[in-house]
Length: 279
Image 1 (cartoon, rainbow, N blue to C red):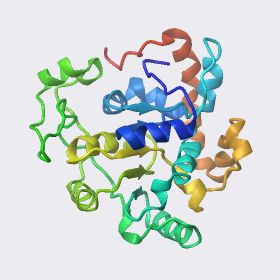
Image 2: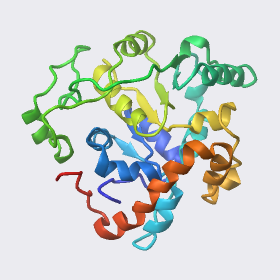
Image 3: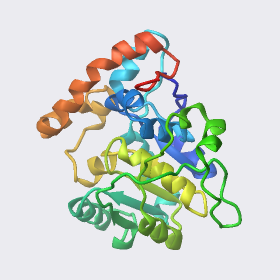
């Protein structure tokens, strides 16, 4: 759909695949599809993903004009990860969170559950600003970072990656250092739509090993209590957005308003990647 090859299977199968292979997981929300046209950095991050899940109930429902697509929400994926044996091994889970409040809620959740999550397993993300250049086209070898590619390198690596001469993307060397020392098997990024995918792509190429990197936005907060609780029946029937809208109308109404463009994009481009602005 719109140039993204979505995973076909269950949430548990997706987690099993990433647990074995490692790599970057993205879960585009409905508003994120609009960013495929508006945000070249987001386009590059999505193109860099190793696995994409169809998180947007609205997009999945509309896509059924073409064919049936199984929805896997970020919440379902996170719960599937928590059900694995990996989640009960100390230092295996690492959370990148949007606030100290989210960190507190995550640790409170850990104290009342079977998960050995400590303060050292949580990182409160700073406010990221754009910086120059990333997305290496070559893998990291022997624990050393390869040189960053030039724009000409990127043009041969993927059609998504050559749209601009400068490549702004988030950077966080401190985070890379922290993760490099702890080496968690699973990194859960919950800092919000769009930016999390750019950070996930950055980490994928900066780390000296290959963990699973899950860009699933607010999903951990639905479980830990940092966000409003969404019943699984609501998630299953694609109406979890109603609970979120009632809890955060000022934040989510503008985002949902942008989604009005999505049906037109699907009708116009179908399976093809929509062009970015200016292409």
